[in-house]
Length: 138
Image (cartoon, rainbow, N blue to C red):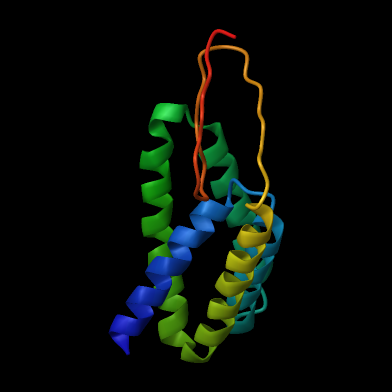
């Protein structure tokens, strides 16, 4: 059982942090906060606020520190989700459903081609799969 909790909390933390920089963030945030609220009602709003602060911090860091910040957040939320699941193993299926819903949403959103225009020497890719082609200088 401990191995399953570790695996699920690791997957969930990774997905949670990736979702912080997507349009699906509010749904994921509310779903995860709702799980904590099932343990203790007063936790739901607190967790929602903490998740939003974590997202703000992730979005505010410089590009070269993004992976470091993401790793810190994954570690933090893996531990927190692990504690939640150990105290309430009955929430594991609900957490899996949140992750599955996000996977389904990402598949629907990733079918198109996205074009971004940056002014300056900037290139980045966040989440998802597929090819990224960068053209600099016109």
